[in-house]
Image (cartoon, rainbow, N blue to C red; front, side, top):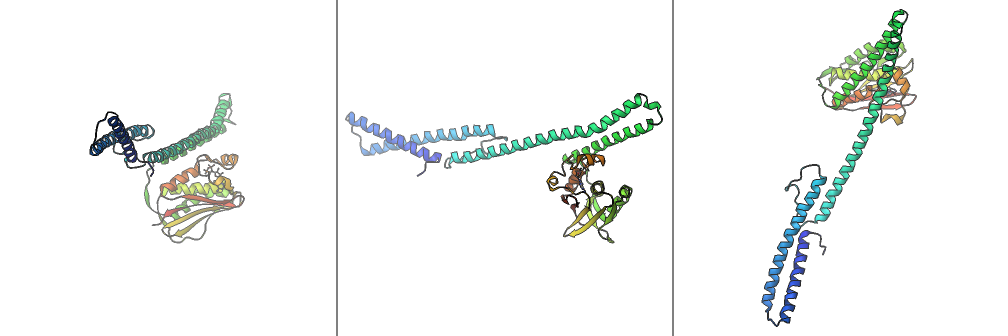
Length: 346
Ligand code: ADP
């Protein structure tokens, strides 16, 4: 029989103690020629047994339920009360405690890993932010210094340099606005205005707004087919407009002249799948998993030249997720990309 519960330990200790005491009594009585009947021996044995059982039980109970609880109190992050920690005396206490301690240890090491990765993420984020702001700040500083050193009186450069400074300020403003939006999403401070809206009309408006930008690169913006009927989805119109705008702007920025950008709607049960396809540069698979992170860029110099903040896809992800859906990408380097997400159909 395995002695693995406090109750079994109590029984064993009291039995052994009672037997030893009765044996001692026997020797003392034989030595002193005192006659004790078998009945008295049994009575004394049971008295010893009960006394020893009660004291052992109380002591073990005290040590297990008080002392082990104290240990748990030190490692547990919530308040340990008498009621939520009561090990049963007939249970294998040590194994149960071992399992609970191992669970706590596993949770602590997981939390440590999470903290480490958050710390790395925070360091990277601050580094990226400093890097992003450095370029416009240096250029504004340069233009203002040139203006102060005489450029202000030179009509051939004064307006030009002021215009360029303004561009730098606009860029910083865009970075700050985008970050503000992301931080509001991350802290659940965004007011969503859901309604039923026609996606075909919304995308047509976005195409109209980006027509000039696309024409400059001889890129055509198209629907996959002639959507004659409205496609109604439940969404926040402005926010989904921003998602589609960001995806189409990226498609224009990362495609070469003469390419095509196509928007496609597919009816999938209770959802509409929206695809934005380009036959531009495409993205190598190794970048895909990090693409929606803040400031992540594939080709850093090209991305900055196109005027992006590196935050567009992160915003896209937050907006789509706040609609209860996800955004994904399929891409082949050199052939093009398809960014797609779903929305709930009306
Ligand atoms: P950015 O402001 O740099 O465009 P985004 O968050 O919008 O930032 O995009 C992150 C990166 O993903 C871009 O820098 C670019 O390298 C890559 N990317 C985004 N869209 C496309 C696309 N349609 N084709 C190829 N690469 C893309």
